[in-house]
Length: 389
Image (cartoon, rainbow, N blue to C red; front, side, top):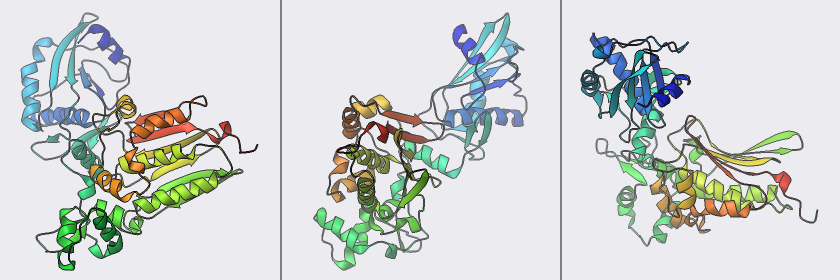
């Protein structure tokens, strides 16, 4: 590692990608396990490459130093590879600084997350400067990022398919020119991913995607899958929750916001484009947060759970006309169900939003990895006059 890079790291505080240790003891199996836990946790945490720096006090950053001959790269690689699955790419170095040697273990950004402790099957993640067990939604999110899980197709075993509205399903089937006989309906629904067949019980259950698209009130079972609109009337805050299947929610948001901004010249289509992107790209494994829409004088903000899909950044989102999507199964069906063609424009529409506000202000696209959240921030109402005003 370059000495200047090491000096920069020494100025930073411990966090999800940086850990300081005074010494590294790897004599007992317990010590080897604790070290591997830290490596796994850093590899599993969101962000680029991480580092464990040995021979430095974490509070004062005082350089204690190590004995280079005791800092064996081959041994460290063997300890981690024996306990970690899949393997983690490491680099082990000794760097001389202030006439003392410091050990630097670089943990490269992993595209094979999540990693687990091979002996116990446990997944770890960093919360700030602490190594902790990964929660179920965090593990699921990592599996989804590498394409091992598609959350739209996860079955809801506590529900029966009677919660689905047959008229909505048949309307979709008609649009794709499928007209199955009644005794074949379940098989067709299953093949399309709308429901799941449990071979052990012989029962059918709706998938998350099937529920979101074809249940009149999926929020009864998935309460986090709503849209919350917050605005002010005078000094009083008003919170409106929008429920229904995905198409109903979009249409109800359109009607509510159109009425709210009636009489202004605000480009409401930009807001609807942002909401369509949020519905399409949100992380449905996050059970704690709705899609949020805030309408205020100084900003209009749309936030949704889940940072950008793997391989995407702000530049690719604005540049590409066909960016990768977290929920591709939903996208394919929304293309057919949406008679307003809103989803034909997603991705390209983010570029269009920038043009809408030319001369008024820039939009901000915020990919907040630590909070697993994506935000679109647009100019507020104050910059737009009432029509005729």
